[in-house]
Image 1 (cartoon, rainbow, N blue to C red):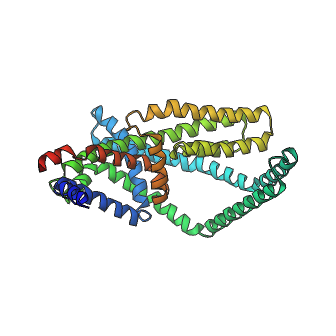
Image 2: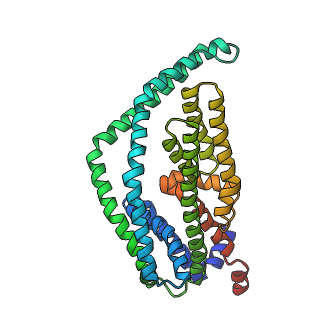
Image 3: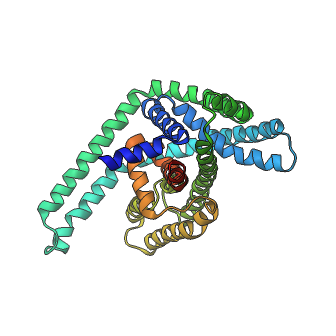
Length: 354
């Protein structure tokens, strides 16, 4: 107990540490209590971080910031229109086709499972297969109920989408245009003794920007390459599988392993145990290997390296705490913790007190 009091007295006597703790606590409370209500703001911040890289590139070649913002924002709007007009209808159509064919796929899976006790009687029993089929049916029933609830709330969903389509681009534009003014306004509420917090923020801000830009590029590249490869192989739902393969990188290590299951199931349902099935699985495996060993290191060369255990732990912890946004920002948040540990004034404080 005396050691704890000595530690608190030694560290909390430094106003820099007190300011840092208060800022971290306030940020944690705001995100925890208001994360769902602030979803449009979070989306806008992510997009603003993504576009800030292009704005900075234009500024380096002597383009005025306001003109750079206009050019980049116009390009962003054109890309959004292309996605909404061309890609979104294709994705929705493939989702509808998949749900239409889902009962046939489930029946086929059941017939394949029922053959297992005959083929491997020493390893699998009929009771185990029956329990597995019951579990699959219950999960599909729950999924159907969720889809029905979403369809019932479709009116609210449409209204939310319309609001997002208006609010998010507007906030992205002002985040880019008034970046310096917003930062100046925010820092006006902070105490003067904040050099430690500023040092950590500058490092984390750089890491978040690199991470978001790298992750979005990784998603789009993986989505595009996987869609092209699966389309070339003739695999059904190529665009949809490519999209989810790209999104799987949001969950490091786990996402790539999880996505092999639907890819293999759809390929096996379409072609059976054939060379086409083998090529589809091999192609997916090669894409993931290239992503993990070539693309990701290239895109995230400037991001602080974290141990795989730290990354997985951060995904599990922050994902359970904040859901999707916790998963998306798991690595930047882990980087924040690492930056705090590295910048924590140990020797300096001890020598100052002594």
